[in-house]
Length: 91
Image (cartoon, rainbow, N blue to C red; front, side, top):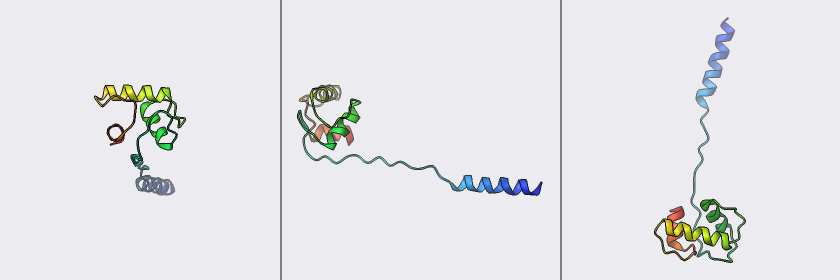
């Protein structure tokens, strides 16, 4: 009987000491305007943010999604991810 209590105390101490992992979100750095034809890891970040397939290539689908994002957020609607659009997305 005494041994069972000792085991329970050990388990409780272990559970109390363990803490959940904290995931830190770091916004990607703006490295310059992205537009149709751009290929970059930054394009992947934009595509992920827009919820479209992230292939790292800024093509028609990405341009359309960026224009829609800009329109919905009252940004200049040119389909180019410049500093203002980037800041709004990742700010």
